Amino acid sequence: MLYQALYRKYRPKTFDEVCGQTIVVNTLKNAIKNNKLTHAYLFIGPRGTGKTSIAKIFAKTINCENVKDGISCENCDICKMSNNNENVDIIEMDAASNNGVDEIREIKNHISLMPTFSKYKIYIIDEVHMLSAGAFNALLKTLEEPPKHVIFILATTEIQKVPLTIISRCQNFEFKSIPKPLMIEKIKSICESENIKITDEAINQICIDSAGGLRDAIGLLDQLNSYSNSDIKIDDVLLLNGRISDNEITNLFDNLCNNNVDKVFEISDSFEELGKDYTFICEDVVNYLKNNLINYQINKNNELIEKVGKDNVINITFEITDYLNKMRNIKNKKIYFDLLLIRILDIVNKTNVRVDNVEKVVIKNKNSLDLNKKEVEKQIEVEEKKETNAITKKEPDEKYKIYNELMDIRLNNILAEADKESLKEYLEFKNHLEEQLDNLDDRKYFNLLSDCTIKAGSKDGIIITASNINILNELFEDLFNLENFFINKLSKDIKVCFYDEKLWEEKRNIYVNKIKNKEKIDILDENDLYNKIKENKSEKKSEFEDLLEIGE
Image 1 (tube, rainbow, N blue to C red):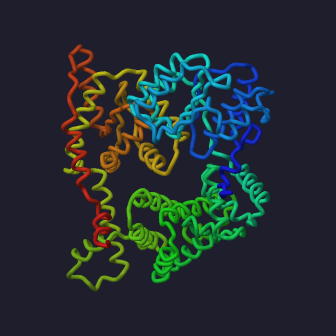
Image 2 (image 1 turned 90 degrees about the horizontal axis):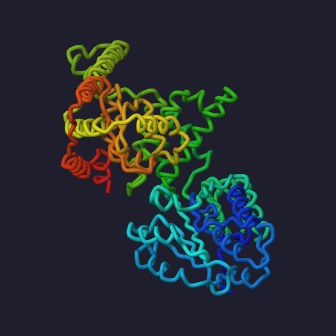
Image 3 (image 1 turned 90 degrees about the vertical axis):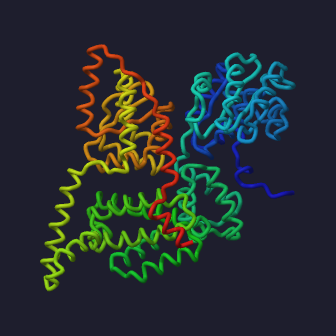
């Protein structure tokens, strides 16, 4: 008999075996018990949290001949056929590979036929967000008026890609990430059943790596079991997943703090030799620093914080996050990581004086090279103050002129159709935005927008102002990603307008007077400017990309 993967072997077969989705399970059981079934369900949530498994259980239980209290009997012919994937009345379809109009039309042609054995004919469409626009339109009419003997169960990991017209026609269930204690309990149970020897540390790391996805956790356990011959230790987990331990991070920071430059880069080289993933290493270091900060806040006694300084640790954390965003899609990540280590060496050893400032001092004092160290430092401090003052008065960079032109058009178009309800919607969205952050990129954009103010909005546009020109330039630099961020979070197409705070007040007064005088505000076309910016953006190479090309 062929070996069966553990995640398939331990896939739940009844509602009682489901892990971590109590609300979803109880609601579906009650719907069956009270005969309150609807024609379409939409299961939403991260991968590996039980969407497809519960869809199969729900389909089987609905048709079970001896269902009791919403639980299938597991003994009738329907249950046996369903467990063996032989029930022809339960049709499973993967929208990732069957995403065209023809596939949906085939469903429409067959739904009028009565079930062969069961009470209901049930269609389970997995990864439904992968359907094409035409396929969604074809599905729409079917969902609106299906025959009484048909039930649809749709599942998706990316709800923002599912049209609102589909969502509104389904009963929606949100699946949560599986809590870590439940995952640990499940992994331990499987290990006992399979006679797998494993340490608590290894189980804990497996659950951390799986990020709330039980299927991923069981899949990783299966892989580790094959690798370690049923004796799994923490080192095995770290070797297979490309991560590093807290002890390795502590060793790295000891050498960073002691300015042992050679040793620091030896450690970086060793990570490459062991096949570690530098993206994961950065994530591990961020998590390590976070835990140290929390420990310090609780106990006010932390060796790393005392050695490096609380503010420096926070700065390092944000520095790593920034590099991490740049590093994800780069082939040679080690170059980025080594540059990051240089930056951290500067921070922890308080040598992060900008080179251009030093050069300014040397030029100004070329005839006085006998200045002592204190005098040089004083000169550097003066130059830095001058530069700081200059930043606050700085005009927008010439390279952002085209962005300003685009923002002028957007300001005009949004104010032409601005309304209070839209403004209220955007303000409420911003107030609750922190609750909706899903990843480090989201956190980056949230932090950037925290220094900004929402001023006005229309149904398809939002005006955001910043008082600091550097923040405004950074918003321009990340315009397309930020626009996608808003579109994903608000689930609608939206034009984002970033504007200087003082200039906004001037422009606002002009438009207020126009509206008072009932002057017509024409909608302007932004497409040429928008496409020009996009083309320039795609051609532009960053300093780091140039370095990578040299390295490769």
